Image (cartoon, rainbow over all chains, first blue to last red; front, side, top):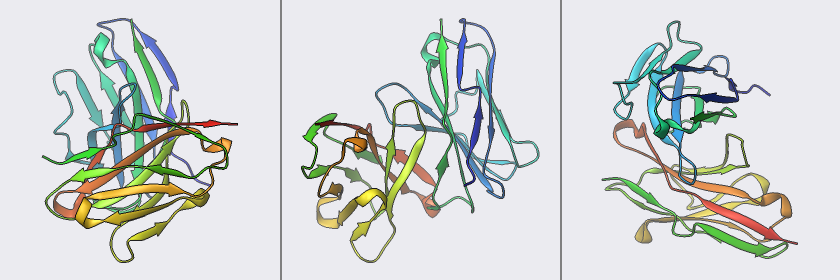
Length: 115
Length: 114
């Protein structure tokens, strides 16, 4: 069964360093989502791509976060510089069709710890 | 503003007992509704979803949920809980134009007693 791949699974970094997370969605899925999940809370959407275009990044802290999906396939989420409050699980999801109520399939996540 | 409320942070049930997890949403129109499950350190897995039609929805692993428009609720149920059901459960809504805005509740952690 096809899955969403994410790497690394765990990342420990120091405050003010740069970090990057990678996501490979299920083959053929047009829509890709990045979520942040703080411990004890539900996931919060950071950015949504339709192919290579950003559909929604209204919750992305653009002063330090950036996301790209250059060829409309895999995607990278970057934080520079990292802050203590960025410690969280970063989840990637993908869905087959365009924005809408299509089922999202989630990857295992990247657990980020900022010291 | 749209919101999803899961009033129970933790629930403990005995194995074999029935389960109901509550979810209420706040949105002007009927959104699309989802329940996801998350095992420790893992991503989320879809249990079931409601778009329209029959208000009682069957999902995987023996779960079902009932949409009640009058109560703005979408509660998750299972008649007999298994120890492997211990996990965190998230209710989510798809709202907005083309239902492309996703909002998750804060989750309910389920413990299962042997």
